Length: 238
Length: 67
Image 1 (cartoon, rainbow over the protein chains, first blue to last red):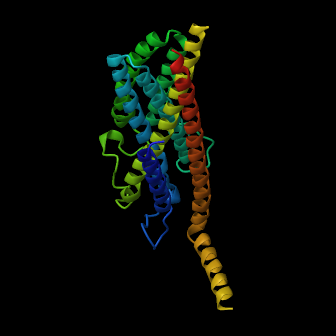
Image 2: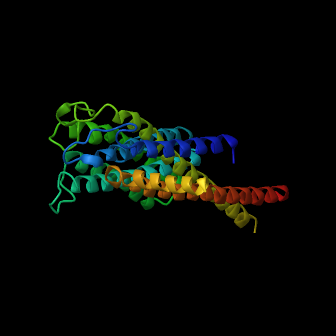
């Protein structure tokens, strides 16, 4: 294993540990956050729920870059990278939907039985996740690896183009629980500036964790591909 | 004797920290346990992938001289 990878892995893990400590830092001592009615301590979910979406967006961008690379070079490794990034993006998207649902249930919908309220951002995010699920449905429908790689790459680029519209442009035009609705900036007067001290490192940390999972999966898929190639070579010789 | 006293003092301090602020620190303890678990898992997976990669490498290199 390259030494560089080991260093990056260690940095990401230490970084995330510090982020977790920062996210729970308590009142009066360090990084005191204001206690808002209804939100109370759940305001700290900002450090966890929102980075899920940032990580998903970063991974979809990575996926699209490798999709373009795959179309340019026909490299099966680019196809693996594009597919793996999309897979981890879907996982972070699902985690984002789940965390948002739990958060809203215990704050805005406290005392009700609502888990899913069709908030514009929630709906659009679900559509976004489904668009990437369709990517895997498309892949599974094609048998020829080269054809699959090319068609999936084209779809992937289209899927990525929808990301800023579904996650940013459309939800901001509609009334929503999320800050940034009606065209406001996402960090509004209800978000205390001190929260940015933990929030931005949390975004970077979760992107790092996403990258670790992505790298592991890519290496696994490459080893599998190499094994298949060896198997096919043997098949030809006998 | 002073040592024991200091230990009891430290335990009481942890108790105060944990129960302060609506027991928020208990959640931090839980989250950190989960995080340590995930970290160990990431390292273990990396080691397994490494083993797999080296065996794939060995397989492909033992095949090449025959070609």
